[in-house]
Amino acid sequence: MSVTTAEAPACKFQDSLPLELQQDIIRMLDPVGLISLSQSSRYFRRVIDPQRKHFAERLLVIESRPEYKGPDIVSIDFFLRGCFADWILEDWDAHRWACTSCLKLLPHSRFNNHSILSLATRKPYEEWNPTLVTSSWAPSLHGTDWSKAARLKKIKDNKIDKSCWRQVAHYERHFSGHARLKRRCMECQYKDRGWDLHRSRRIRYESCLDRWFPQLAEVLVSKRPPFPPRIIRPCRFNKTDEEWTMYVKRCPQCEKWQELRSFRFAGNRVNYPWSRAEDECRKTQDGTWVKVTGPILCNHCFEREYGRESLAQALMNQFKGLLEDQTKEMALRLHLPPNSFSRYRMQRSVHGEELKQLLEEIPQCSLDDEPADTLAPEDVAVLRDFHGKFKGVWGNIEEETEQHRRAGTPIGETYDPHAGGLLLLRLMVWQNHFHEFEAHWHWLKACAAEIEQNPDLLVVWALQRDPESLKL
Image 1 (cartoon, rainbow, N blue to C red):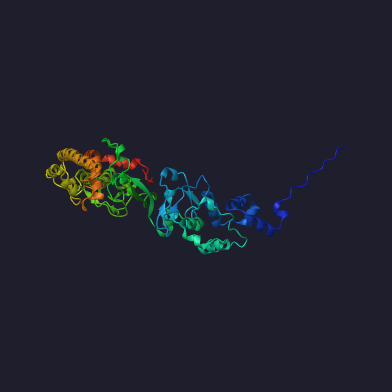
Image 2 (cartoon, one colour):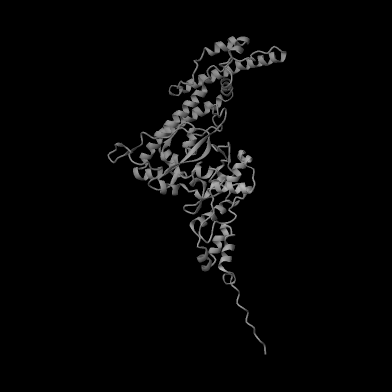
């Protein structure tokens, strides 16, 4: 006769340990483990009773993992007035940031600059413990003090020398992300304070036309020149792009956050204050045009509210202003920069008289003139011929200067004070890239004629693009 022995029931964790000891063990869990334990059974759900801040701490741990981490952000000075980061948006789009108000992991486009770049709310560095080691859960429901003063005291207790705080990198690595629990997305800030416009990332574009109408050339029949236009500014000299600050606005009708270009704002310079299109009108049933009043709508809502023809007219007004500014800038580049040659070299060179006579054949154009209004294709042809002659004569002067330098009797080493520096560099850009400026001037003229003939191309561009994208 076989004797069957029944197995003893498994001892439960909550029955084997006192509640006080269980609470001490739970306090040592990390935020992810705390929430996981609270969701394992009703007993632990009742004992832990996680609050909103505990769920927020879990999201802050998850956002610091490698799959969501994103690029490191470094301040460029001690007072944290500026930040440096890798602004390749293709890499940024794959990462997520936690909003501690709506408790969601959202892309970077849902946050303003302060929420992502600020020292207090940015993601911490990996080598300085990017996650919260233990949660702030306590039986009394009083969390840990995460204030700046508490962090300073903690560093002092760890016997870290305060003199090293003067180093920006060391200071940042200790205090980055210490107030991430206060980070909120733009939608939560709008619900709380009604802010419907936020500053966003900085992105490089080739011109103001690309900033406000990106990828419009793909819709047009006129093909864009394969080389980008040169930018001649003291801060971005002889470059092909410049940084623009993006702005994100909330549409009052569809309640979507979109880049400022979706609302028919326009600025023709880098970070220039934007202005609403003054001639934004809608066409009534009797065929008359009436000025639009009230809150500004995005392109999609404006088209549904006032019709396709009204949207085409509004975009046309914005596009013409930007195109005129860009054409004017290209026309300035086609003219010889004023006072950009050395008078000293001209006087000493045997080709100086030849160059002097050549300069009398064409009027000088100062930076204050606006030749775009009167410049015609035949004028561009004249400038092209002048450029070829000038380049030949100037090449002879440069060759003569090089020969004198090798012989030990240099010529033109001392430049005229009004002709050196940036102006002389402008002359070099004008000589080497004149054909690029000419090609872009002709392309802009062709774009103006094409859009004037068919304004609906702007509507096609506006309705087909992704309105929430910062780059496209």
